[in-house]
Image 1 (cartoon, rainbow, N blue to C red):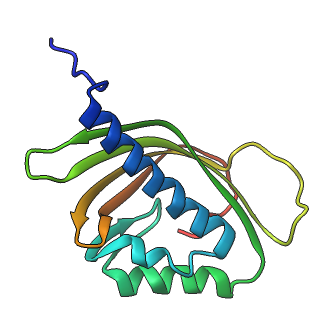
Image 2: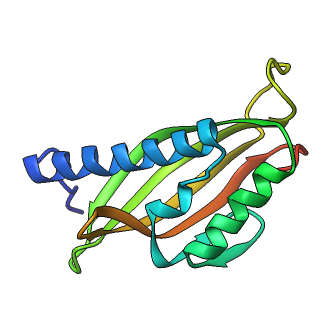
Image 3: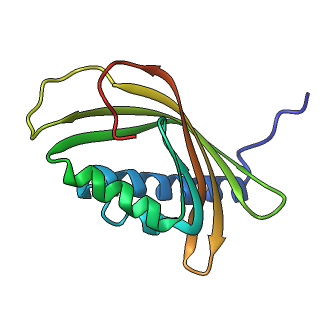
Length: 150
């Protein structure tokens, strides 16, 4: 088995660009209720949470608008074990473990373990405006009984 070399200059630049995209996305979700989250996606992107599949920017925008309309909620999406793999078609596969700390209510809330640890799988495409997600799938690996906004 040949082990891929992730330390080439091109791979490191790609990884940094995509990690910055992922971190900015989750910052938007956590700090601004995802009001602009749909702009991180292509027009026809597939957005699959642990509970439901959506397609297109409008559906993604509606998801985050509905989430905010529910009332106060605190969330922190923490990214671990980040990995990117360039694809032959010019896209990039992204994989990481997502730890979600979240609860309804206004801060300061009681501290608890992550409500979900998920395998996050994304595809990013380079557009005229920079990298955008064309798909995101979150597959829960561990989960407690705290509701997500799914």
